[in-house]
Length: 358
Ligand SMILES: *Cc1c(COP(=O)(O)O)cnc(C)c1O
Image 1: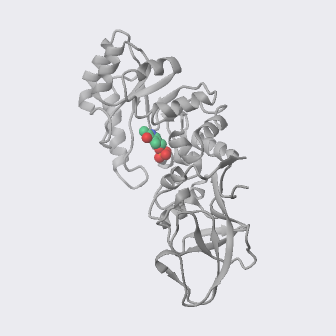
Image 2: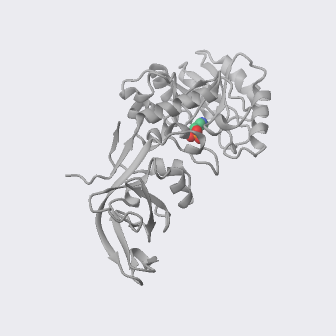
Image 3: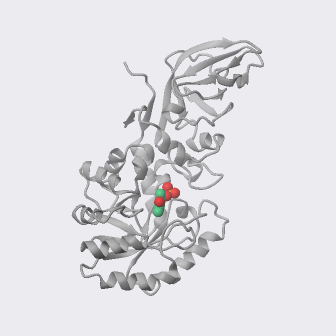
């Protein structure tokens, strides 16, 4: 019998969060960002659960788009990082993938290949990871217009560097740069909004918004949790207590003797560790829950297990399920205890943990 360590995926919560994104997007349409295996929730399951409401998906790379097709879904899929080889444009045409063009050599491949996929053009408005500078747009547009096969340009995409911080002036500056740069082509579409942009009052989202983390109930805003923003947790990560014991005052628990009992303490070992993707940097006092009651981690997280203090749950015993994150303990809380963000925790759950959905 397998251990009961599981990530349970609440598909109604996912759909409610997608609906919340659409409401916030106003007149913009909303493509569902399902990269990185649906932020760790399972791309086929997530894309399928949204298939009757989402008009488009977005992923990072072509393998992920192929996984959406393998799930029997036919909406267009935007490739946010574009293609990695000239031949991929043929697949884009045949399978209705919409690559983002962000670098010169992708234009070369497009010219040489003679394929005419639907494409987007990435504008670098200050993120400085990918994209063409505003000054270069006229030349790039001229090249696209000249291509004999005529790549079908859908529009422009931009990406924000600091939208997680509503007080940052950078988002407005990037928006202004984007609008000015694209203004000579008013008939083409525009897309700038990640999840965070949905929560910035007055932020224009133009034609297409691109929410990711908010669909999964994680917070895109520094200092706020998903539930603070009206989002529902989608993943509940749980694992069984496999043993309990009393650690005597002065004794330590786990590697490095990192936690020492001040008084006799009933503790339990939980069958999950960093080998499952639970963060090793989550130290003593990171919250967990059992039977809806909050408890805390003690000592160091090991590869296959971690220790919890059961002082708050005296009736808990072997076989009981501990919630590592979910409805009682938010993934954003655990992330902040581990010095990271919910994105990293959700995408980091390893293949050893089965996902089930309901
Ligand atoms: C991942 C990604 C998104 C979604 O970002 P969230 O912060 O998860 O909403 C949107 N656009 C691009 C270009 C991305 O890479």
